[in-house]
Length: 217
Image 1 (cartoon, rainbow, N blue to C red):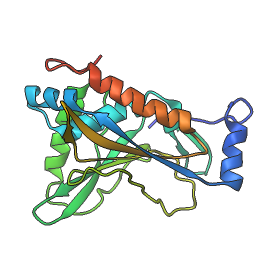
Image 2 (image 1 turned 90 degrees about the horizontal axis):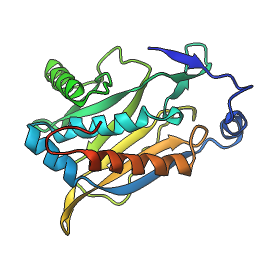
Image 3 (image 1 turned 90 degrees about the vertical axis):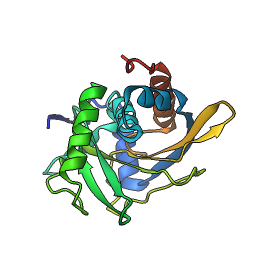
Image 4 (image 1 turned 60 degrees about the vertical axis):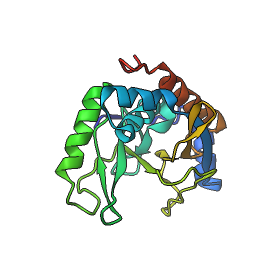
């Protein structure tokens, strides 16, 4: 887990960060419909699972931008991770419970997808949060039973959870497209509406670059 300590004397966002942490601890939440038609075609063609592939898509975009990789070290110093990995919920339909685990992010989709399946099998009998989760993670889950219009997650801490919280719902046909709601929650101290909007735009761009034969570069 590599990271750099934030130098407030040179960080352009330093004053804004301090304002939101000291006076207005706000978490922004935005839901956008994305066209997942290329992604559905891709996973079906290549014998892959939708859930881990979508996790890889959002992980790829999140790791492309500094604003999504902030956290705290053991001494309470603000840091920026070199990369962050998805901490996701694996649902067990047989009993309605879930396992919470982390699969390390990998830029290569096939490598990540394989490791995801291995981790899922390893913890298939667990109904808890896997111990020893790394500090450099963000939260991701899905509600595949409903196509919602808005979804919000309230993190009841001291208002200093800086990592993204990403959720998506059920995809449904809309004309000739398969459309799915995608949500991100992010602390305003590290990101603005511009950064949120860019996240959704780049998720759609990455999905659109997928072909039935190979993942996006």
